[in-house]
Image: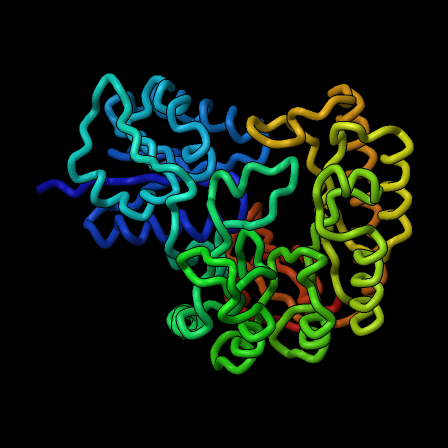
Length: 423
């Protein structure tokens, strides 16, 4: 029997990357040959995101691209958008299978019987029925591995669709995570990025009950002791769940990198309240102050949303000035986009799109200034850089422990090596 081929495309977050990599290994174990997405393949899998309106559009564009290139190939759409909008996706010409949150890891089973038809097959269930935790991590895709340790979210921020797309907060357990890291270490990976939807909520069992069996601090302590992995990063952690103990452990650790990514979303307490966030800006400032007191060299990334309903010029100015005065390193700026079935979509005082875009630009400029300042402070220092395999025009890149991007002439001996580098 001729070997079938499969190609993947991932939209969205690091968590999606870890899951795509796992789906790829599942299908390779079933005898599929993995191809690049731009190549011709028998099956194309699109792992979608639902955080912004743009991700929906990208999904449609990708399906159209496949239709032009390989009209006879099977197209499978999974991920958050597939869970939320399965019927809409099924109506896109060229889509053959839509897999919701409960079914994506059964992809091999579904592909055994799938044929090209006029209508798409939908395999999805109500998100309240989704339980269980599927371990996922990326291997062979980059120098660093994204390891999923938590999934779902019990927070109900008024702008967010993720609880509807991924279900209740649930986690792997510490013992399993340690076993997975030992497996990953045996492949020669040097850095692991811990990922989840609400990472700091780690410890709720796979059935999605509210009780914590373990917690994130216990996980971090256990990972410190593992031989073979030299670097860990915490991908993103809510400010109310980033405890002093976690910050202190990272400050005293040789393995956890001095780098936090802490979502803020707004620097105005009024807007934070409308967003149904679980902290005020004062708590956020306290967290940043403690990190910088213990680790002046630490990189701090911030997520922020502009143009949320009710955000006046005054509220935006509060956010801008708050971030301007905070000792942070860079921003991920999101322009608010209306998501169906969220509380925010019902809110009045809509901010015009043009105003949202102007605010986004101002914060992106601020981010550029912050990152330039973060880099400038460390010029002349020698820091450890993990170089990646990609070669672009004879150059390679890597990141310092505190997340400064380094470009250097390509040297094959440096690939996946930690090199002392004078900035």
